[in-house]
Image (cartoon, rainbow, N blue to C red; front, side, top):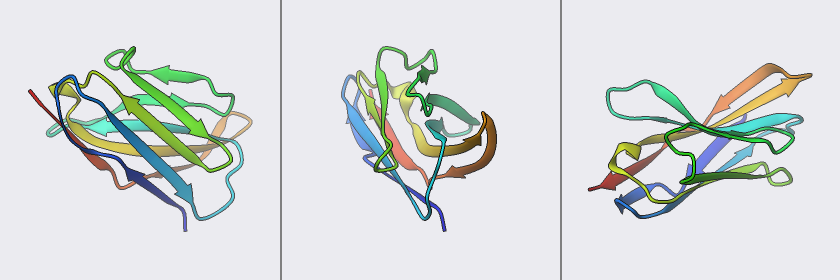
Amino acid sequence: QVQLVESGGGLVQAGGSLRLSCAASGRTFYTFDMAWYRQAPGQGREFVANVDWSDNKYYADSVKGRFTISRDKAKNTVSLQMNNLKPVDTAIYYCNLQERVAGTLVEQYWGQGTQVTVSP
């Protein structure tokens, strides 16, 4: 059974930092991208950042220059360093794994989510 387990959420004041981590387990993964999404209260789930198998990184405009995504392929982990946090970053953050074959998505997994709350 595939599991994605997030950690590192919490409460922080505006301007502060948090680091989220996610570990994937359950089977051998081959070519896969890893990403972070978030969902604020009353809002839909939105893309935050992802890193593909070639280590190309992509960010939502709202977090560029503040968040940094990184991965460890050997450990099947992905992290999100979040700096200069703002109250609008308050959300549940979800880890996402997308397994691809020749660029085509074949499987997708989600973590349970971790709460990030940024106070003014």
